[in-house]
Length: 524
Image 1 (spheres, rainbow, N blue to C red):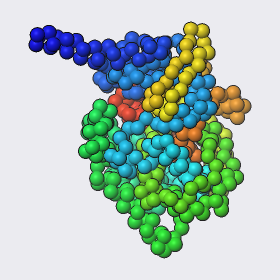
Image 2: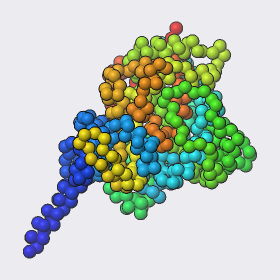
Image 3: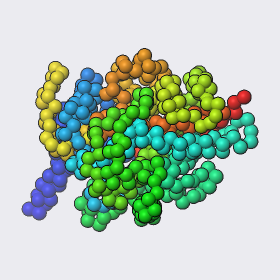
Image 4: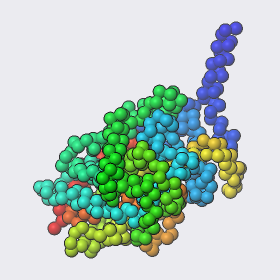
């Protein structure tokens, strides 16, 4: 009898582990492609054979002539969206059904993480976004332009003082130092020169925070995925106490000092303090000209609910601003430097535009850098070919039905908490969307051609109300450093430069397997 119970129990266990979880999409008449029990579609990803952008791209390309594809991330079902029309429907038209991002960290585990705009969910996010939006208009970003230029100028000066006609540079290390200093200045009001003071505490804390690919971080995030309730009970934090307390204390001490002395500074922290006081209503119009194609549209107007931003709320927003700027923006700069080195004809055209716009007296104006057409084309094409996150995600917040449009489709009933994946890397490399997509061609985004680009196949900063609030800042930061750098140097391949570039399969975001080592060649 005992043996029979053991056999039956084993069969039931195997059924619930290897069969039952994988009928989710077949019941909904959604195609999936082949998968393995327990691993689902994720085996290559788990073995480090591909990163998540490549994983979702592989599934995206597997099935043709469908608007969506079902996948299993281990035993968790998710839906990959392929159709631009359906992306618009999910992210804009029916946004209320897809309001949230997938939660990496369980609620209540890490306050600095859970309170930032990226992680907030539901009405908490909906109440926070309008409070922050006035701080990120082009007019407000322009107020920080002088601080950005100071860092770009220091960056240029550092290499001007180097010996040699061609200076070999590890651009990933170098650009993270630039973005670190720019964020320290424009977000925290702290002046740092990380190229000279290479082990300053601010930079070291930043490196520790963004090291999400370390074994420790992978173990923690795996625990979040498999055992969220246990992690929440024991309050297992994503960030260590040292970097977390470092950023919280900087923000709280700076707020206290500024409010005590009534000191005002045109940086992100100053703008958020104004938002708390409700003072941004005095100057929240967006009259500054900014022709950046990639800049996202803001869906919330006004400064709703000002006055209830706590110190921790502000610390969390400044922290995610730092996190995005430190790693994501520096990676975009690296890919742009690589493309310029690999495509000298593009770089020559960009240098010619910079030379035509050089001021007689430095620094250049905001309008000059923000509105040069060719540098915007180059930045936009970089983001098209290399969207750093590689994927976007949404979570179903209330039940939704995808109505059939194509022959053979049936209504797809999505339950609450179903994960939606939008594979931006695959979409932006799809020859159905962009002719010869592997080619780096800024002319795709010329003033004449950009009007023909469907906005729902260009997704580096997301789309809809949950797009990236800091896109204008990121674009200005990128354009400024290249304006200063290419005024005196060309970026050229050196012996350690790998062309074509290979994607790092173990990175959380798009990165190069062999780094970004190139040369700065002095211009005559």
